[in-house]
Length: 445
Image (cartoon, rainbow, N blue to C red; front, side, top):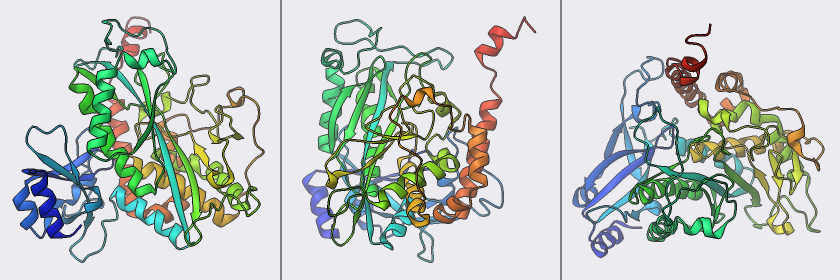
């Protein structure tokens, strides 16, 4: 979109203000709100580099080696992401930005840039990944006291959903006003959602996105999370993408459906001319099985994330793969050869989407480069097999610290900062004494 086109678009929508935003390490929108006229006339916008060195608890890392000067970075809007902001009181827009240093080089610690770097590795192989996420979230009663457990919200009937209603249309209708708001906002912001269904948990919903190129899809997920939270709050309800928000309910996942196209022919490299599986298809699975453990911190980034990996609760516990087998960590859905794909079921809904899919694509890339053969496909219930995923945040941090492969593909400095953030967040968590400790240890030990 040219400058004259932007001006016309602003006039057409009566835009008064615009959000100039970047996704931070947690996938949170950071940036500035500018008057529309200033945005149109200002050639350079800046943010401090520390916008990417902030923890989910709102604190900054102070290690000199990580953030020596907190220099300014230049932000440049990706005008393909320019959208009207439908919930703003005054006519407003939002745009996602890429970040650069003064010398013109890309900011290496920006999550959006990390994904771009992985996609560039595919381009060098004349390949284009295509992805489609399935994103789960819970609707819950407003909860202003963090010490209290979450509860399902009251629906249109005036009653709470107290038992699970998977795939129930009537249960969906209980939240029809919120769902209608989500659809309206999504349409206004050109978010291409495919289907919506009631998932396994009480008041748990799932949205499926249309497939597309990873950067575009991650921008959509990034914007969609804001849409859902805003729509819910307008109906006095919270929406949460926390991986395991309620003790006895299934967790929230973000499953990634992944295929890879040849950039010239646009044919799916996972299928040959006869419609059969290719070696690249098997190598991609082998790469996921081999490298997911050392990169799981991008798909399970918080202490809470590991509570989701619970046997028999609709979340994987290992890296088995199978045909149309939802008990495995890696599922191959039934499809035509041109749509052959792999569903990575490891990620929680709490991830930064840019880093989540970057890590998954990095694993598959390494599998194809190293010709890694996968294990045998699993036809039985994989929940009966041993637990093979890292069981907690500290194990995941240790695995990523030792990973030369992830350092090579995602960047040494980025990895250093990301790991430091995760260590700091764990330290802050470890300072908190939980209700369980007071309940069972206070007067008993």
